[in-house]
Length: 144
Image (cartoon, rainbow, N blue to C red; front, side, top):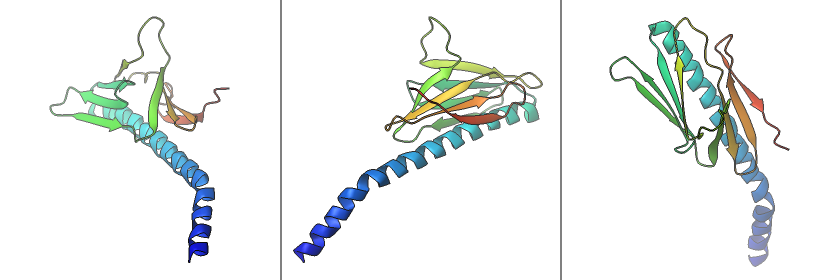
């Protein structure tokens, strides 16, 4: 019985790092997809409702929020555990990067915004909102 338990413990100990890395990868993929869908929803809402939408990105609170002039409209997206909003691009000089605000105007050009996400295993992804199409896309970021 002790031999069987020790073999199971050895197998679990050897496979834990790869399982943990796989879970971090799934979290990163899920978070980038959620951010892309959130940005797409903001652009779509502004176009369909013909009302401006404010996008607020807070690196301090690890949060994205949408506000509109419609009564009661407020949406939030919090990043899952282990995923942080690392940067909001383009980064203005001399202004703290804690809270950034963007205005999405119906019929106008979408703001050129990029939200860089990171995880515990030094994985980085950038979700960029294309100003020409208004559609977000995800890019892998090489920090080395």
